[in-house]
Length: 237
Image (cartoon, rainbow, N blue to C red):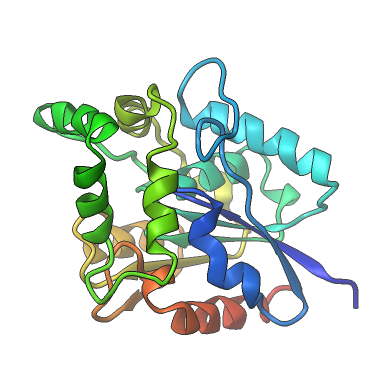
């Protein structure tokens, strides 16, 4: 059987380094690819900051990689990008994994939080504290690299990504027939378990919520995360 491809898409303030464990130990029979989205970790960015624009870029990147019908794995903002890509033509994918993904109706950041987002742009200590809060059960071994990559995000993305998520939504009906796995973390204050379960219900499936883990649950407990996605991947035709 030919090797199949899982494409892992990182979230906001992030990079492909978030998938270090998955890249080092991919599910059996699968190859894992993890791009850096435009404006993250040194990838050039031009034009608007939007979820559709990121999905456009992803389409071009997948064409360059010559990847036929991959499974997309999206975390947080990366989940919105994966959903946007999938909704355009579900037949281009073999499956979809949403890990603490932005809700189908978008994610609104309160206006009073925007000055804090801009402060994160210039205050490295605050960036480190903010990232650390995503891993309540313990930061991953490569946490210093994650902090460094967060500081490499384009200036336009600090407020821009929040605006992009607030103005984006996707129709669950456009995803009918696509196998979907929905995951979340019990201690995630950003994408709460209630939001994860609502997303799963809208997509006609159930949700798995990892106990004692936060927004960064794929990195907090990579073994449990790999087991969940491996079980899902094994069900795909």
